[in-house]
Every structure is written in C-alpha cells, then in structure tokens.
Image (cartoon, rainbow, N blue to C red; front, side):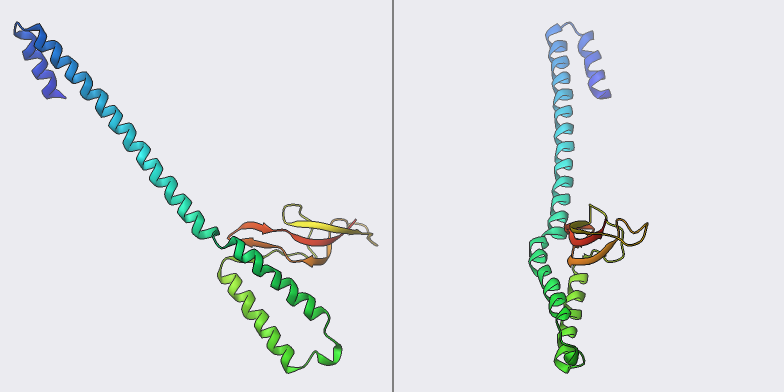
Length: 169
C-alpha cells in the first residue's frame, strides 16, 4: 500500500494526469479485488465449517433409523420375560436368553443409545407419551409413571423415540 502511495505521489508530480488517473483507478480496482477475495475466503471458511458440522452430525446420528428398528427388540425381550411361567424362571435356556438381552443392551449403549427411565419417574411430555391415565390412591402421586408399555430411547442425547407409559391422574 505504501508503495502505491509513493508511486501515486511521483505520478502526480509529473505532468501526465492520465498516468495519475490510471494509477488511482488501478489502486481502486486492487482494493476492490482484495475485498472480493477476502469475502470469498471468509465464505469458503464458513462452508468448510458447515460441511464439517454436517459430516459430524451424519456420523453421530446416521444410525438412527437402524437403532429405531432394533429398539423394538428391547420391547420384545421385555414382553417375553413378562410371560415366563414360574417353573421356567430358573431354566438354563432362560439364562441364555437373558445373556443375549444383556449383550444386546450393551451394544446399544456402546453406540450411544440410552434407554429413557420410566417407572417411578415424573411424567415429562418431552420424554414420555402417556397411553393411559390411572386413578391414584394417594395425594401427590399425580404425574408419576406406574408402568412402561414401550421403551423410549435417546441417541447421543437426542430423543429418537418417546417411552409409552401409564401415568397416575
């Protein structure tokens, strides 16, 4: 910039006004091109940042559909264990199935899945979906969850499926 000013001063001292005008015009165009380049550079950096955020989000939540499909297995395990006859509760095959369930839940946890807590918790419309309201016997029970109908899940902190519950009126 200082070099341009020096050239401009020298050009003004000479008697060719066209040269001074040409230098001023060239200087203005340089400033305009520099400002345009700087805007493009900033836009490009913003694009890079946005693209990186999208990639990170896609990696973090890309398995959401698969997790939702697999999450039904959690409910199926719960339904199956609820209907086991008393005489079968100590059988080896049941222990094997429980081991499979434990490993399945461990795999989900390792993938960033968290099961939403329900029974005994206070109803939260962001986490739970009430499928039935049951009359409460004691005061202060209103809003407490008494039964889970279907499990709810979070994936990396994002709610992907609300828990279906029964709540005290």
